[in-house]
Image 1 (cartoon, rainbow, N blue to C red):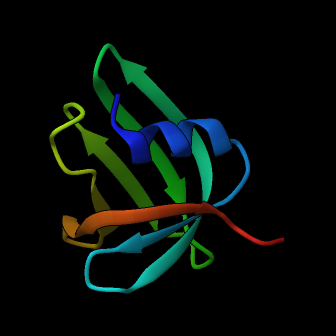
Image 2 (image 1 turned 180 degrees about the vertical axis):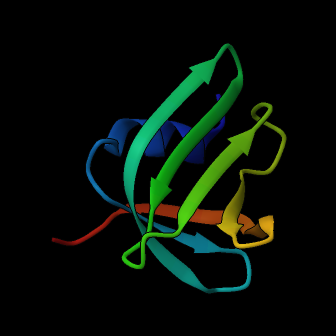
Length: 87
């Protein structure tokens, strides 16, 4: 299992803080986090109500985040770290 995806799964339904490979961060209120064998997908929203989706196909693949925009979905970044968000 992907280490960061497993951490998100263990933290959910509490809020998670994602750090992307460019150093930027986002706090998400998680709605779902599910494994399908080695594949993982999750969904949450940030403080502005923007929906994020997180996906990975397995342990060796990156955990990628996408965010919903008015024009559809765009890549938000590759997740480098996951922590429980402070309340």
